[in-house]
Length: 262
Image 1 (cartoon, rainbow, N blue to C red):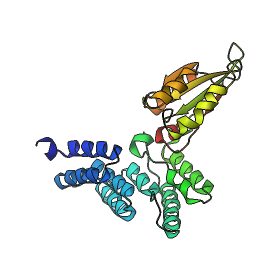
Image 2 (image 1 turned 90 degrees about the horizontal axis):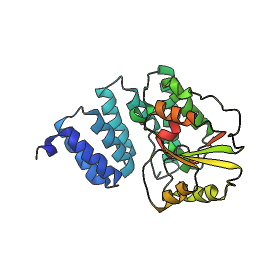
Image 3 (image 1 turned 30 degrees about the vertical axis):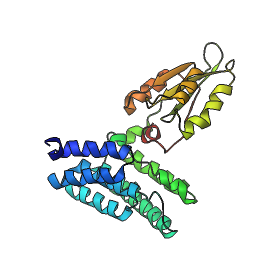
C-alpha cells in the first residue's frame, strides 16, 4: 500500500511494465505517480514515451511540454521532444510533419544551446524511426549528430590509432553491439564471425548488454576475446581504446543509444 502511494516506486513499476510491452498498465502507473506528484519529471517523460509507444504522438508532445515547463533548463527533455517520432505513421502526412518537426526542433536546439553531460541517460534517443519513412535520412541524421556534438562536445573524443597489426600479424577487429544475442543483429552477424579466417583476423566482441542465450554463446565461442563494456561512455571509450584495434565495426547504429553515442 505504501509503495503504491510512492511516485518513484510507481514510476519504476511502470518502467518495468513498459519494458515488457505492457503499455497500458505502464501508462496507468505513470499517471498515478503524476496524480501524487504532478511535477515529477521522470514520470512525465516516461508517460510521454509510453504515449509514443501506444500511438498517441500528439499527446506525447503535450506531455513533454509539461515536463519542459516544470524544468525549463533540462536539455535532455528538449532533445527527447525534438526527436520523438510516431512509430507507425498513419499517412504520408504523419511522415512529413514529424520529419519537419525533428529538423526544426534540432536546428532550434543547435541555435539556442544547452548542455548534456551524459547524453545516454539524459536524452537517450537517436531518431531511429526515421529509417521507416522511405526517405533520404542523410540531412536529418547529420543534423542530429551536429546537435549532439554541440550539446555534448565530449562525444567527439578520439582514441589513438594503433597503426599496426597485432604482434602475431593478425588484424584485430572489434565488433560492438547491444544486440549480440537472439536478435536480428545477432542472427545477421553470427555467420560473419564464424567464417572470418582465424589465421588472419583476431575477433574481439564488445557487448553492452548481459543478455545470454544460445545465440550469444555461439557468437562468443568464436571470438578471441569478449568484453562486456561498462555503462559509462568515458569508461567504455577507455576500455575499447586499450584493445588497440585495427578496426572497430558497429553492425547497428541507432538501434541502441549507448552504442550510438560511442
